[in-house]
Image (tube, one colour):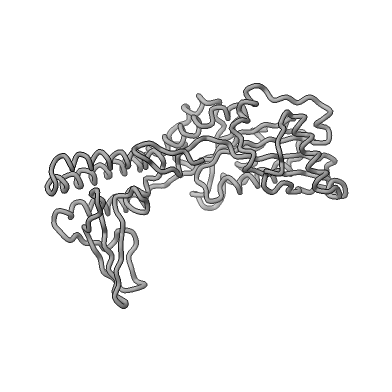
Length: 359
């Protein structure tokens, strides 16, 4: 089934017009296989397809790929520039407040920068985050506006300003001029960092762990196509990284007639599934299943899941039944997509150097 899904993803998303929207499809061979993926591959947008059992190591797989991707050539350049900013800031504080204050500031800011880089939020080192080096405030009088660039030396202090006419402003750090000579080199490095940051590509990686109760040749390809189309929508919408589990049942009507067991590893992997965040997709023959009430259909699905050893309340899943109609099959296939917990810290905040897991 993984090879079938790989072909679907490659046919649909590896040759789109915009190169930045193209995806490779990679099938790592277990958790250890992640480490054999060339760094050059990690610089692209990638889907990673793995069997369900590999979801046991989902956090390790996810972080291994994500963190390696964060230290590509562009990110290393940003890290060097960030160190220059720290050095300039430390020197200014040393001249104004003394050695102890400058060292405390240096190590606190260095730790925050490290956390931002590791969490994949390098773009927020300068602006747009509570932990950023700078913030911009604005004053206006009629159509004349003035921006002030404030740098966090422990407390915010104005280091540069710029003037412009309303509706004809600047973007980023363009147009700022230092207000005192000691801030000149600091401002220059901040602007270089911000300009470099805009050139660094932040690639996407999405992980799908797959289980199917039958060989891929027994499934209606149109059904699997539609399931993957919905997965694509959910995994990539406003998201640079994602991790999902996909379960596929060939025919829920005959599911109770055969013994289908998850292996011990697969049962353990399913403990990473978030049953409150996902969807059900059913394929039915026109003129049959659609005539049944939603409750009857839900009961059929729940009975099928029970036979698979999954006693779950499907009403917790969003879009509980999305019908994929077919005139060519007498089967009622089932797909279940659920988020897979990887305990990533990407949207978290840092507290005294520690990170709070929020998803």
